[in-house]
Length: 137
Image 1 (cartoon, rainbow, N blue to C red):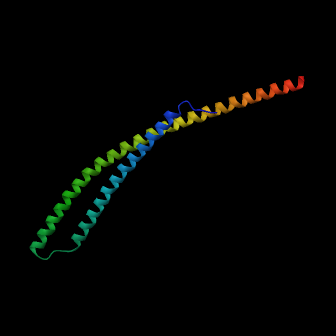
Image 2 (image 1 turned 90 degrees about the vertical axis):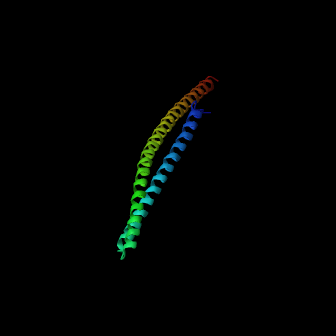
Image 3 (image 1 turned 180 degrees about the horizontal axis):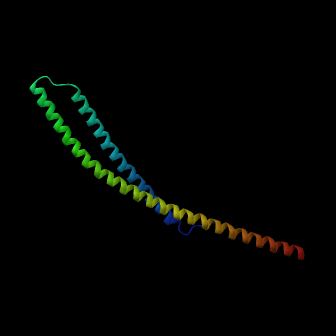
């Protein structure tokens, strides 16, 4: 029966790869959430600017709201830059973990092929010995 001597390591690396993938997906979701927030902010700004205020108080309220939107946009852009960097780091970690798993999986395949070849040789040797013994009888 075939037993890969690094099976526990392979399973551990697969678990790490799964965690790295989850981390990447979480960071990507966070980035997409901030991008969606920025899009909503832009849409709200556009809707406000379509209506021209008629009196001074309305203009002041519009200006105050636009300043608030500007502050929120700057804040969201800072957060977005941090999230992009985190996402890139998480993606690199996931890709590295994935390569490690693939390497171990290839090693397992090679070991399995060698095992099957050795088993085939043993079986052939047993058949040859059986044939020689049968011929002698």
